[in-house]
Amino acid sequence: MSLKNKIEKIILNIIPILLMIGLIPIIWNDYILTLVYIVIISVSLYLKREKGDMIIFLFGFFAMILSEMVFISTGVEVFVRDTLFGLMPLWLPFLWGYGFVVINRGINILGFKNKKRPEACVGVMVFNKEGKILLGKRCGRHAPGEYSMPGGRIEYMESFKDSIEREVLEEAGIKIKDLKFLNVANINRYEYRHDVSVHFTALLDSGEPKTDSRERIKDWGWYDINNLPEPLFYPSKLVVESYKSGKNYYDQEKI
Image 1 (tube, helix red, strand yellow):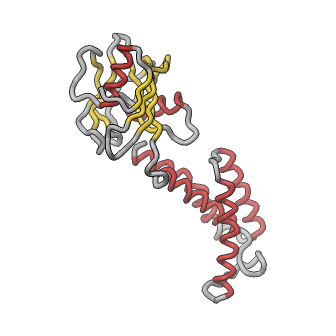
Image 2 (cartoon, rainbow, N blue to C red):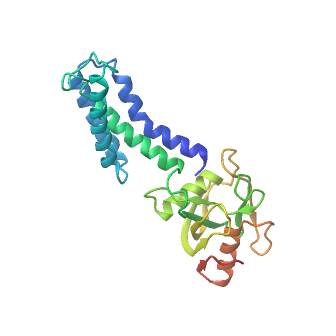
Image 3 (spheres, one colour):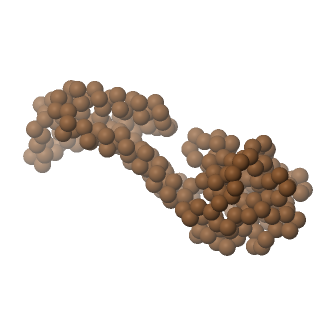
C-alpha cells in the first residue's frame, strides 16, 4: 500500500472522532451528546470492525475514567461539565475509548507492529487480447529501475481477489477478469524484507494502463512474454518461470 493510501485510510478512521469533537460546543446536553456518540461509534464499528476493537475501546474507556479521576483529585484538571460522578462529562470516556481504537488502527496501517514478520503479498500477470503481459518500471525504494507486474501487500481481512483488483486499479488504472491461481512463493531474497507472495494470472477487462505519480510503478507497457525488458523484478521472474514451467511452489529458491 502506498503512503497516500495509508494516509487516506487513517483520515477515514479519524472522521468519526472529528465529528464527535465538533459536536461538543454544539450539543450542550451531555446525555443527548452521549447518546449521539454511542450512535456514531456503533455505526462506525458496524461499517468496519477489526479484531480487538472492542478490547481496545473498553481499555480506553475505563483507563480514561481512572486517569481523569486522578487528575481531577490532584487539581490538574477541572471540568465545567460534570455529569459523570460529578467529575467529568458523561461522553468523555466514549470519546477516548473510540480514540484508542483509531490510534491502534493507525499504528496497524503504518505498519509499526510485527516488523520482523513476513508480509503477505499478491502479484498478477495481466494479459491483453494480443497475449502480451503488463509490466511497469519500479521507482520506489524497493528495487528501483526494475520491471514489475502489478501487486502489493494484502490489507487486513482482504481477500486475494479484492487485494489484486485494488492493487491493479491503484497502480495501473485498469480492471481485470478471469483471475486464476499461478503459484505461491516464500521470498526472502532482500535482506530488509521477507514476503510470502501468492501470484495469479488474469485478463485485461477494461481501461488502458496509465502512470499514477503517487504510486511506485511508472511507464506501464505491454510486452511479449518471450522478449521481456531487463532488469526484471525478482517476484515477476518467478511468475514468468512458473507460467512457463507449471511449477506452483517456491520456497526461498533462487532462479
